[in-house]
Image (cartoon, rainbow, N blue to C red; front, side, top):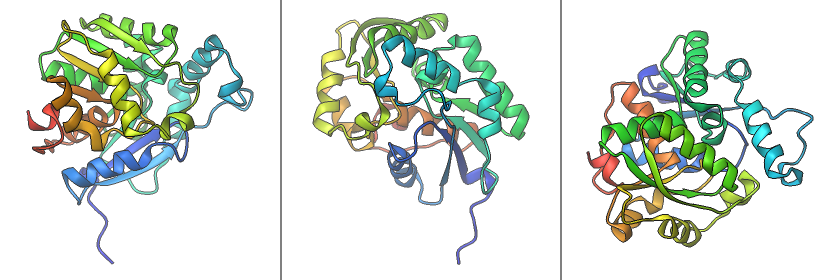
Length: 252
């Protein structure tokens, strides 16, 4: 039996819905370095929430805010083996709490686990800063209100959303079944001449096979939730991830 990777090669990912998009993260990590181990643990939705498909947009918005409560995340962060870094892998459950709320989530996780911590939303900011990008378009799967929350989160960090589209898909399970063609259509529809990059802020979408193709089609960086989460986690471990055929972020 091969020895387990050292903590410096293990990513601990807190995930909201089991069996939706985890394989996309594993596939991306494997492409970057087969020695990287990825372990998921799941953050339970409140028992009173029920089926997200039955909630109206305001109800879904409230549910994702509740799921991202810092103490709830910390209590759920139990991994079989000690990771070197932990990330809260849910865009909306971090950005709907605003910039201060996202930093509070990371702070509580880091203090509780004693390792670097972040989230997908904070990873988007780190990637945009790394690429010196200040104007973006949003290929959003959320309702208009939640898309506006993401735009507001970005604005707090000095990033302008110059255009957006909102697909208003109610559940992670529906999004995990989206085809590459459908993801590509949404991303192209979101693009705008004034945008320096297009963001795809949804962790249930399978975007890893599309990274290079999307950038080729649009002629600019396309930053997906999977890509920025893995990139930032590895960066926090001191292991700069590089790959020539996974888009601008991994070539930079």
